[in-house]
Length: 130
Image (cartoon, rainbow, N blue to C red; front, side, top):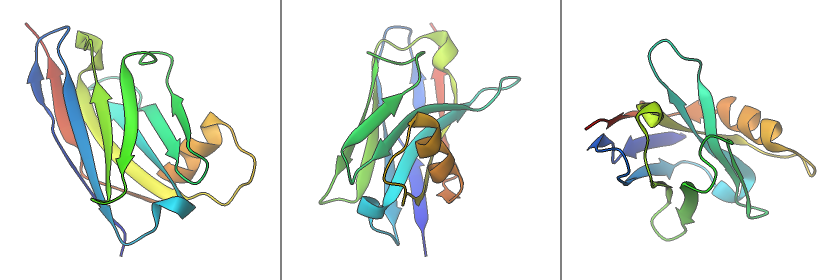
């Protein structure tokens, strides 16, 4: 059974940092795409970052490039989202999602769609405010 559990959210001041964690089980990340999405009240859901571990490929939304980093811990079955230089517009519910990635050739949208077609966690809240 695929399970994903997020943690690490909280309140941070603008310019601060947070590291979100996604503990996953029930699947091999080497056959999956895993992604972080976020949604703020009144805004559309946004694919923040996507990771195809098999190929070591990482995608980022333009809004977070250079500030966010996605990484995995092979031993702990964790995927992290390191978020630096946080802005008020980064606030929202962040959740991770994972789904099968069988395509040999793909782009960012394929990665996100594959992840979103699978399972997702319940999310963790991020607030950015002074």
